[in-house]
Image 1: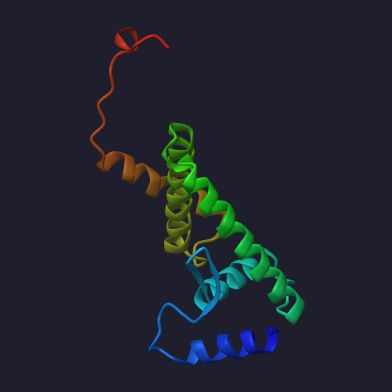
Image 2: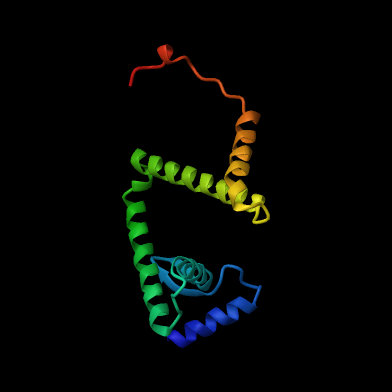
Length: 147
């Protein structure tokens, strides 16, 4: 079965007729596709460069994905995604991830052609430019609500 999945992954990578990928598992009617599996494997390799795709690790990854999908479905059934604590956590994660992406992009813009001793100053200059373009209005501390 693992070799069939490997073949499906290979063929899906060569075919553009099914952008969502071939279903490799179905959990309560929701498909997990070869595209989903590829995305997971790429992420895993990025997190752990020593990770190798073998029939065993492929099978383990599919099991993890099925288990995760099952737990997500149960959490959704219980309407946990509608709780303010979840929404707040998601908002914080989204904001932090977006800021990290911006910092990474600024770092790429600066590039390696600038001597490392000057990079921090150039980085700060770019952050200052962003702040200077902004229209910021803050209330006086004495007018702020008590926390």
